[in-house]
Image: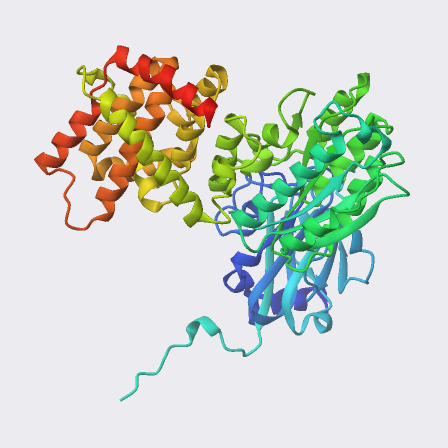
Length: 177
Length: 402
């Protein structure tokens, strides 16, 4: 598929997976307490350029996002500034509770090196076959564009589609007659 | 009530043989560890605690994080003193042990007892601190024992590197008459960042303020609440009888009513719950020196400006319910705050008041706003200053004889 086709594929059958994120389980290691993950993920906050997710002790970030349903992940958008935006981003599907010490223990499902276009909003198309059955996603931001101490991420958006699974929250008790 | 997994790093190096903390540094440390384990498992039943030693032949994990208090206490027996403490390795092993905890939802915390000199340099410690912060592990440091030049600085630097939003703390405990555990009880290490564990901490704090190394009456109110309550009630009754004589005289300051209203409400609440940490404190007061008395009173009285979470929450609840009762209790409370030497009396009075109020609160048919009830309470408020002092003289003597 050419780049143009893949771009349209996003509009065609992929949705923003924001609604399927299980917020109670979302975690981010090494985030600065005043600039937290919600600034990059949540509707409204992520559009605001002044609100960023920032790293704390060093430039790496480890983000864990569980979903309420099984999804297929098609592409991601990671936006940030030219210098302090992320550069190398590794994605792990269905790995629970990773830590910085075991990110190198197994190969990522996909790796993306962000260009300045990506940082402005161009989606990164992923290896779709690797993300067919995703219950949770771990995003490891390894370094940033300029090598500075702090990585700043303005927006993270995930695009994909759902597999037909039952949303348990929608189950209602049937009244007995 | 934070859900937490804690690893406690014990210093069992040669420096722990020293006796400047009674009975020996090691023993004081062991007592503190026992108390911390108790407090953690109490504040949330799903909390786990693990223990490792840093000196000896090398860093050794005695017990991995578990919520079984018996296992933790058992492993403290038969520990040998020797070798040198390896702080960096100890912290790193603790971090590893926490990483492999069973319940990943628990927050990670390491408590380090640093009694011997620290060999590592500041840079290395800061790196360790950063790594802990990156993995969102909180660190509490108990700095006691040896105090060579750089140690305090190094530990402060370590804390600064780890600290994220005040979740990590450092406590410096100088050698002295107070036991290590007593000093620790009032620190955020025990009270868990100002919330949770407050019941345990409060009653233990009262014991500490009283200079009593064990619990009131030698019975742990947490382990055996009925027995502790029964003992306390009989003590209160005895004091009430003695108090009745003292109460006949003077009208007392109605100005203090407003101030202590909340504290009395607190006491009402607590008395009726049967937990009565406030009572413990008051009773402890009777047994003590003036200085520690004043400290304990200051703690328990909760001058309206000071901040004690326990009393604050209960204030709003109970104050609304029993303003009359609160007033009555307040009078007696305030009297004692003004007059430091009358604490013996006050505690009896308070104990009595709360005892009475607890009974009143528990009786469904009794309305504390009933005029006859109010009358009784009003009479209890009246104290004569001279009579108070007389009673104080008698009371401490009596307690000494006991």
